[in-house]
Length: 578
Ligand SMILES: Cc1cc2nc3c(=O)[nH]c(=O)nc-3n(C[C@H](O)[C@H](O)[C@H](O)COP(=O)(O)OP(=O)(O)OC[C@H]3O[C@@H](n4cnc5c(N)ncnc54)[C@H](O)[C@@H]3O)c2cc1C
Image (cartoon, rainbow, N blue to C red; front, side, top):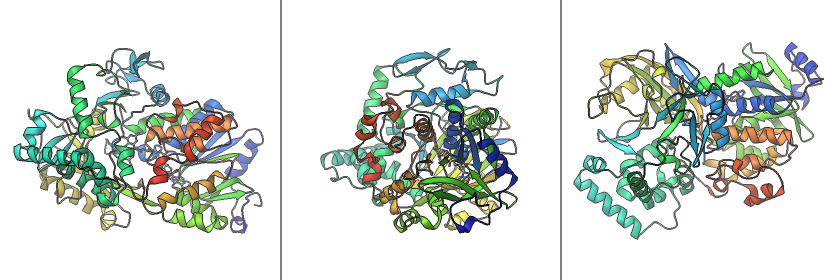
């Protein structure tokens, strides 16, 4: 029992058989304890197996892998929590994904991918797979997403087409044109808020039509309380000017149509992405299998709530398992993807007061998705065929729903019956909101009622429903976020503790960023690199950090104050385009 170090409060913890066995294996092998089996935790696990002799032991509080990128299966239908596009500007991540799931045959030019103007073969054998025959396939999907406003569909991102102008109508088009001109002549300076950001790039009319309502639904605050930096980080490069330039370019050149990586394209204008045949969870389940077959362990139902430290090192973590027993895991290094606030709480009474204060004032945005199985939708494409959108932003006033997913269009294999539509209505909220506390039945009723009210479906066509609540889906850039460095300095002080991933770093990281943080942490261990600056630097620039030489003093000192620009500047922020 004394082996569980870190203070009297833990002395009573029983060392279970599992831990004794683990201590025995540790005699010969170094061990990494990884908290969370989401993309970051699993990437850390497999990279440790591939690059080091260190054994990963992953502790996961739930009973599935993939975290926010898991796939929920309900009555034969598969639900993606939010719709995950597999796209990265990082060569390494693209290749990594295709090593796990081979690309679909015929989805691109046979046998090759294009990236940054280069062509290359598909990385792993089997290099391609037929989704009609094989299950382990990465599909190539065409992105389509529109805005639903006043019961009409508008392209997202806005496209300058005759169709857009006709849908808007003459009066609205003139108003939009005038307000854009006004914004160009009299831009809001300094550009402080997200409202300023949008108006400067699109004019007030277009902002109110296409961006205001959705952004405010996502973050639960008005756009004038959100920092302009957030727009700069998430929808960088997008403006009416870039929309016009993109339109002209697409007319003048056909180049890029077969380029699934489209690295020269601003992210918000990317038109193709990769997607596992059975949803994102399929890829993460494959990775989990590889970890187990490579000698790693994944323990489900273990919620870590104590991190025991001694002399600038983490020595073990403690959690509660499904049976209600306290279980402890010792290791040589520790990766955390658990929310930063929970981690700091778990570090106990030795944490300095300032760190605790900043940590307790970190905010999160939560998320509910209501899956509805329907015979048909009440809206269709102009030719009467089913909607082709992957997702639709709901700008309609008077409803709480923020976005609609059409899972059939992510992958037809997500839906058990081809003659049914399987859709997801997304609600952005806080765990403290009344909507979060509604029963599943009441939430399903709300979703059906709202979808019927805005003309998306007839309530009588709904055959089945499934509700998924997703706490802490978005780390918020409000509250004490601007003082996050206090936490970072404290946790970085523990030499064998690595904060990685999205909530793990309280950064708005996508899968690829989350993976890159884990990969970089593993490389630091393998190469004996002491700094963690290179981990924090990921997702702070458009071209990801891996393109910059990885090691050496120049890398580590070249980042100004080593703090992500967004962290330094942001006071309050937030809108989501994902
Ligand atoms: C609505 C939405 C849409 C998105 N769309 C995209 C997209 O299109 N493309 C894209 O690339 N990314 C997208 N993302 C982001 C992507 O989901 C995340 O980047 C990724 O899942 C983060 O991985 P992670 O491992 O850091 O964290 P998570 O996925 O959150 O995984 C963390 C894991 O840790 C476990 N855990 C937490 N606390 C504990 C604890 N105390 N003890 C044990 N286990 C614990 C959790 O159960 C979870 O399994 C989207 C996210 C959302 C919410």
